[in-house]
Image 1 (spheres, rainbow, N blue to C red):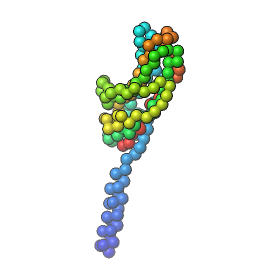
Image 2: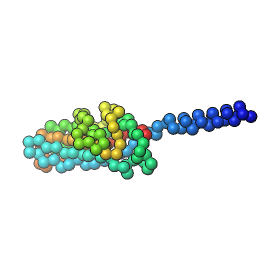
Image 3: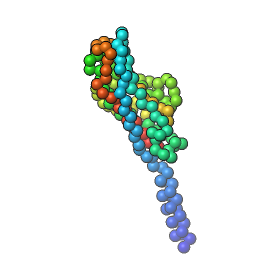
Image 4: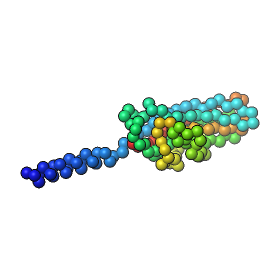
Length: 152
């Protein structure tokens, strides 16, 4: 009887212990239209994707979150010339980017460059479009989108 009880308790404790070991995968998608660009010498349009507590599932505020990738999709400024685009990742509540990565206008992709960086409420991505000339002012053709892939 004692051996059966001990076996059941061991099985139950293993089940409970293993349930805490599984991470939950989640995503947050944000869309923003970059700014209208005033082209003097060079112009810049930003799309900003900041995270706030309401972006995360209820009850996960104090859980450690791990960034697993950033999916991105960019628009372009079709009536402007010399366009370059970069994606910059900012740790939570930090005013300086970890770094910026060159990406292409009017395209999409996934970055894993920032995996392992601090991630959570207050983190953000900025997509920066720069143009050198063309239509005054410069208008974006659409919106930029960022999807944060993470686990907790």
